[in-house]
Amino acid sequence: MFLLILKRFLRSKIAIIGLSVVLAAGVLSLFIGKQHMDKQKKSLLHTEHFQQEHIKRNVQFHQSEIGLLLYYIRFSLVNESHPLNGLSIGQRDLNSSIQSLTIRNLEGQKYDTDLFNPSNLLAGNLDFSFVLIYLFPLLIIGFSYNLLSEEKEGGTWQLLAAQSTNPLRILVWNLIIRASVVIVTLLTLLLLAILILSLPLDKYLLAAVMISCLYLLFWFAVCFLAISFQKDSSTNAAMLISAWMLLTIIFPTVVNNYITSRYPVPEALATVVDQREGYHEKWDMDKKLTMDKFYAHYPQFRKYGFPEKQSSWLWYYAMQQLGDDDAKEHTAQMRNKLWQRDQASELIAIFLPTLHTQHQLNTIARSGLSNHLRFQDSMASFHEKMRLYFYPRIFENAAVNDQNWDTFGVEHYEEEVRIDWITVLLPSIVVILIFVFWAGINYRKKSVVAL
Image (cartoon, rainbow, N blue to C red; front, side):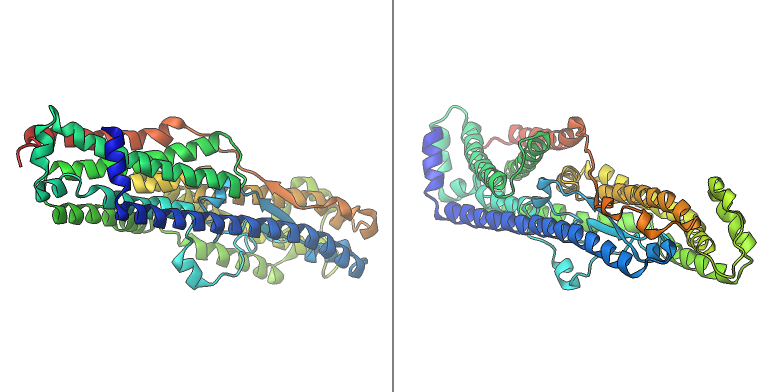
């Protein structure tokens, strides 16, 4: 029976066309992902070269004062891209993976990013996750919506049912054939992804494969449920397309609007204002007040006393530091709000397989909001490390040439993602079982032979 149903399915021109379109879109998405990864690698190489040239050039022109030199010099930190980022680009096209910082105020530099065409950002990327979440369900719907209704409308179902002791088994086998073909198509694309994107064979790839397969099985469960109501083909198609629109477009939009309104971040503007005012107002304040606050933050530097000159690098960098200190409260509030957004979206996604799949793929690909927030934490630690290293040299007016500037290369941050298999897989499995159980109840209430 299996081979007979498979041959019949593969003879369908619609099936061949549908598979070809999704395969073509999938291959295109892999090359778009490779283009994204190549761009990341190219940017890293340029950054490494630029930093060395940038430091050498500034050392050449600013040898008199190390404080003046460090006003200009930038040190780069890179958020490493996992190869799976080529499958799920996420927010990596919006949030820069490379930050080049001076030791001046951090808050004025933290949110610097590359220039992007807003039209391209609005359109988004045709990455693999887009093909998986939006196009594969349409293929499944096209294969499955009329499995039972077409036979009944053509008058052949009664004949098929009469030749079988369990007519439901025929329907299930038809779904299994279609699920097998679609999953083989998915695995073919993932095999190509391993070759094109040089994906390592690790637990993260395994998680991506399992998440993707469960997502496709979820949509087959949705189709199985729709068929169980035993409506005509046009009604089934309308129900399933409506379900696709709700799950992929409407519900995610509603969730996004809810989260942004539930956790607004007015602190974003307040942080910028506080940082700028906190720094600029220090020019008109008593230097002693500025230095007292600075030494309260860094008591280890109190030995440098109070600057006697009208202008000094000690006082200048103290003002820069206090700009960050004045924005500290709003910075923490904004960071907490963004974490709350991420946690809320993860919680809501448990009940929406489309959101759950996207969130989990972004997490293991290190391309989601949580990765960017952790990168910002790493950025703050990196910035503080550079400050603590150079502050004594600035305050002591160390000679520029006494420092070995060649040792300052690009530093890297790489997030280590811990996979909680229950959190990753269980929500999809539960939803699939609920839909299959619901469909089973419908079939018991109304025999498939009845119509």
